[in-house]
Image 1 (spheres, rainbow, N blue to C red):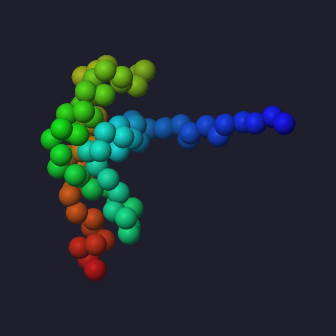
Image 2: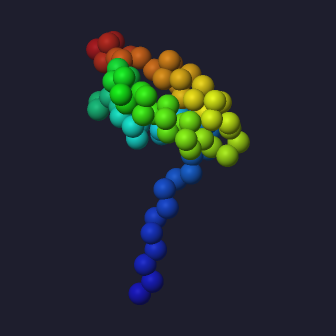
Length: 87
């Protein structure tokens, strides 16, 4: 019987790539209830994310541009979920 592996979904935007890097390094996490991204405020995880961006940028970006994209995304994410605050 032929077995196939399910391939992970391709990341289609630079923002999506940056969010993926931030999640993989533990710099951000999802609100368990609403799914919003939340900054963990972990300086080591942030530095790890910047290192990943610097060492393995997407093909269309330079390392400096990749780091800038990760920083931009991180700066746009707060440490609280907007829907949890409204509750």
